[in-house]
Length: 194
Image 1 (cartoon, rainbow, N blue to C red):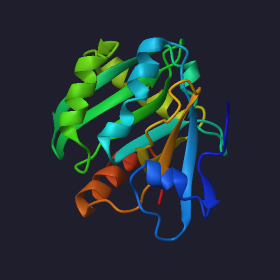
Image 2: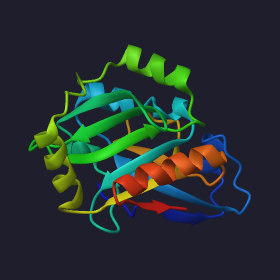
Image 3: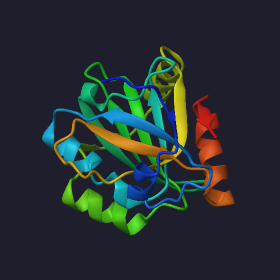
């Protein structure tokens, strides 16, 4: 199920209310993301609304949303980088190509993240990355569809049986959170929706 990456919904207040985010302008930016058929990943994705603001990155043709239905596996990133803590999920297809990432930002709820990973553990830990792997990742990150990104808040679903997840692009985050999102996107040559 492909949708436009983000669709402006003029006057749409019900989705904003479900996301606990008042829409001052009356127009919200929404993205419908197809959920995977695998139960563990679908259960994990349905809990993302607890995280608050996160950086959502995906690779798809221009005008298309992420499709988690094509995900064969995922892993967690837990590392300390020169500019701070990096907590993220990386999602892969069968051929090993990465198709999406979800990064925590300074505005995110880290306790909800720990509870989420405790209830629905990651598929695998991030493997050690040698020079060959880093070079291959760099080449793959620039081949194919470009990365697209947005700071979003996932909406809690009223109907747990629906085959998609709703994300709302948000503009109001801390200056530190915005700077972190811009830095992550710059490292992937990703276009960050503002």
